[in-house]
Amino acid sequence: MVKILLIALILSFASARNFSVSGISSGGFQAVQMHIAHSADCIGAGIIAGGPYYCSQGSEVYATTACMTSPYLINLEACLQYAQEQSNSGTIDNLNNLKTNTKGVWIFSGLWDTVVNQYVVRSLLSFYQNFISSSIISTNFDTYAEHSWVTNSAGNPCNYLGSPFINYCNVNAAGLILNQIYGNIKAPVKAISQNLKSFDQTQYMNPTIAIMATTGYMYIPTGCQGTNINNCNVHMSIHGCGQNYETIGDLFITENELNGYAESNNIIMIYPQVAVNLELNPEGCWDFWGYTGSDYALKNGIQIAALYNMTQNIPTPLNSAEAF
Image (cartoon, rainbow, N blue to C red):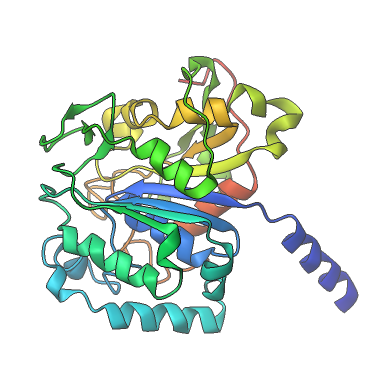
């Protein structure tokens, strides 16, 4: 019996799939949580307007103060200590993986961001510098941008604050993130609308408990379809508050400029979706303070577990009648 369990354990490790993440705002915090919790398999991250791991320390008050407008309240030592304790206990992957497995990290904060203060994001940089070399971290802290996913082709003016939180700032976040992680990224091509698919998120979690939507979205490049799907890299991009499909439709999915790079570089894009809950999550944010439970930043946290499983078991697209 022990031998069988050992073989199963070895096979589970052997089948683990590398992936990378990106995110903005609450999606940025969630992307950091994914990177830290699953550092054995997550090889890089692109973070826009996100803060350090365990920034809120499980407090909604801290989430809306320290992690947004009042960075002087951030207790970075407590964040680091919590991460180390969880690493030691195995509730997140060993933090040593960050040094050995991370290929690149890209961090952005706009000078005009009035939602997440830039010094929150600078605290994230300090957090990462405790574990990985600064040589593989790239930052942009000098662009006059409001709170937004920044692009060089789509969106509102760079100083605009508002939906869909995608701003044209002559900053190619999509390309910069992917190149920082994978290197030698090919120029983007036109994304193919038929390659945008929806999938059933309920196979990964109970949406009522996870406060997640029943449907997620993905871009499967032409070169990754059929049996080729296992030969492609996987990148998960996590929307911010108010950017879920339920609120803005496919704008985040189609205007963040990632899909053109996905098509030319054979990278599968996964766009998980959170749900609006008037009591627990009225703004449609990812959990970085504990509305799903105290384990929200750990591997067994219901959202983290669901997102990780999406990267390891690529979703099966819904049929064309159900795709958007």
